Length: 230
Image (cartoon, rainbow, N blue to C red; front, side, top):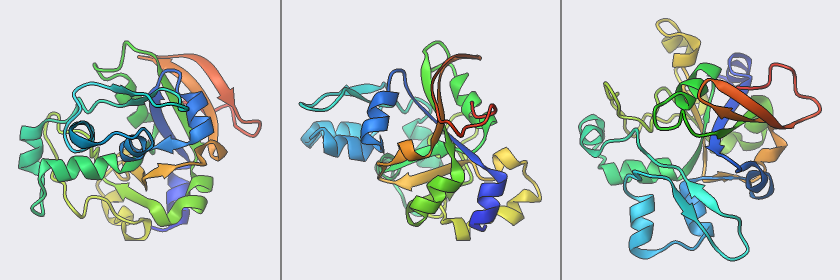
């Protein structure tokens, strides 16, 4: 896949954060779970619990001089199912550590709405960022990976996953997959290693969403279009 194909087919990216997260994201960037654990000085047994194993619930983090941050839960994951679908000799701990080391974006509105409507999140207001794909890719291309699956879910019929799940843009088999898959099911996730400290530079709009409804607009870039929303 070329960068031009990626941007043409997926001109917008979407990220769901906890309610009230925008101010911290704008100031400190979008941080992976690993980056947050580093920044908030989490070590020892607690570090292993939060960074190397499944998080059944969201966890607030606090440290002097930093705003309260929230580590997202991993409710869609199940260790038993993950063990069965992992390839390349990977153990669940290794998969959790891989996921936690990256920041995640959806490439279609249908995918972000599926997450927003999920039972675990539908009744709680969420902050949704809409981003400019072209600008983010131009700045972070060397740290970007693409996934053909929802890598953080093992619900229903878990898809096999392993060392080849995440591919660089140039290595992603977009044309081959396009023969049998709709656009929203071709490239499913775009992930960036560690963190996106300058993510505010790429954000077009920020909204509060609950279940089926956009409750309000938190922020909008002057150059954003009317369609820049989840």
